[in-house]
Image 1: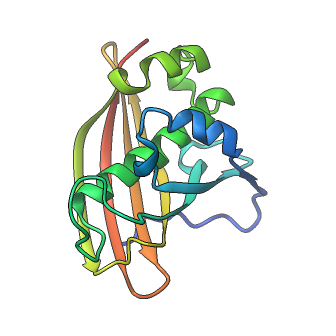
Image 2: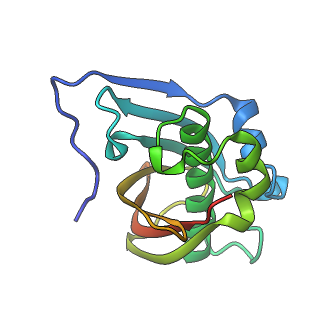
Length: 179
């Protein structure tokens, strides 16, 4: 079952490419050879509903950062690719103040707390068909947000596909601690 959101045809949608310099800064915690996200584009409906804040990305894994080449995309690569598109999405939303539940973050606190405060509380992924890791695409979005006194929970989805029939889907719940 696909979690992709249909866009209301009467609602204006804006698309913006994520600047390479910004993306490089967000992915700085990753070793250069394990930066799989190559390009990203942000989609936003004029309603500013968190579910309309979608990131699309182009990925490439020329060689695995941890194992000999398996010839296909696997669960570890799903997690790393998810993390990268998620961080770029969060940074873009924080920079542009698009998620009210994260208003206590600014870019300085994001850079400082990116790794220790953005936690994966739950991750499920599935693989419908073998996917080519050398070139593939991903879509990341928000299903729901709940802010508590201890953290902000963001239920997300992230789907990947290649130029052929390769496909992987998943849902991840983030727990974002206050800065």
